[in-house]
Length: 388
Ligand SMILES: Cc1cc2nc3c(=O)[nH]c(=O)nc-3n(C[C@H](O)[C@H](O)[C@H](O)COP(=O)(O)OP(=O)(O)OC[C@H]3O[C@@H](n4cnc5c(N)ncnc54)[C@H](O)[C@@H]3O)c2cc1C
Ligand SMILES: O=C(O)[C@@H]1CCCCN1
Image 1 (cartoon, rainbow, N blue to C red):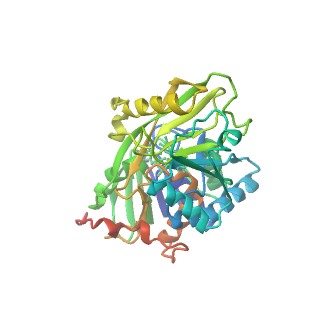
Image 2 (cartoon, rainbow, N blue to C red):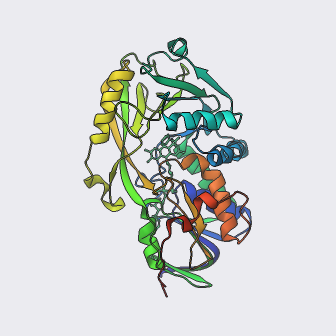
């Protein structure tokens, strides 16, 4: 017999954004169903892996401001569940002193009175051993930044959702959406109805939106997640207080290069390039471009002399990019009871608790508690066609 049911809200996609949204809805006593195409936990989307960076350092005030509440909500989740989800390491931000992008990061933090320490060429190596600061580069440390334990966070929030009465159905792919005052969602196992629908399907967003007559300008890219071996074990470790780092741009790279101290795999430091090659999310293993790894190899050789300049482990993940790299948090232009959270452009994990709250507010028809203008769909001038 096929599964059926009526809900206040259905959330499609149990990545970080869908899981936090479902949790917020259940906390507000909404009868909520969270649908996930893969068996949980899985590593085929964008939210898997042990670690993510959390930081206030941004080049736009609205992100730095949103982080105030995010830190509080992450801490609240830790307290409620008695689990550690965040470790403070600081974030070392480096970039050419004459670069607009680097200066934007610095002035945004200064303007928002965020705790930071500016380093000079003279004292850099005393604070940050085993890193060569390029000539002409500057650096500062965002003191409150650190590492989020991503897989653990996802497990925790999904568990909280279930404790609050929410239902997760995994291994169940959504195959059709019929918009209307009651939305009808068909899956590989059944048919469900709900007053509202939230689509948080990461790289698959446009595949789902096709059922609703909407396509967003989203580009999906595969990221090679590289781990580099320490020549002296522990020299870049979280225990030795080595920070997370972000190079805004450099000799090798137009996009950011970023890294996290060795922690989850002893002796290995995670360093990635903030761009990859386009992929279909269902075919990502066929995307074998390694030009990002070449960029990283040159950077590691030049600036991180304590690492072997050849990745020891390469995992994979996906970004869903918008043209301006800002998120999509909005109602569907044609159906106000369909809410979309997408295009997190490789930097959305840290915002999960606030994004969950905002998508929940949108789906309940409440006034969003943050200014959503940078995240609205109308900035793309997309056209919709009726899906009915
Ligand atoms: C290598 C890498 C490093 C990153 N580093 C950072 C960082 O340091 N800090 C940070 O803040 N962010 C970081 N990010 C970004 C962050 O991880 C993402 O923004 C975030 O995970 C996106 O979550 P999501 O829920 O939108 O997507 P996903 O995690 O992809 O979730 C979408 C879910 O929808 C499901 N789904 C799709 N279609 C269907 C369907 N038809 N039926 C049912 N289910 C479906 C998918 O299976 C998936 O589980 C990084 C990302 C990557 C890839
Ligand atoms: O969101 C972050 O913090 C990381 C670092 C920079 C680029 C990608 N993701």
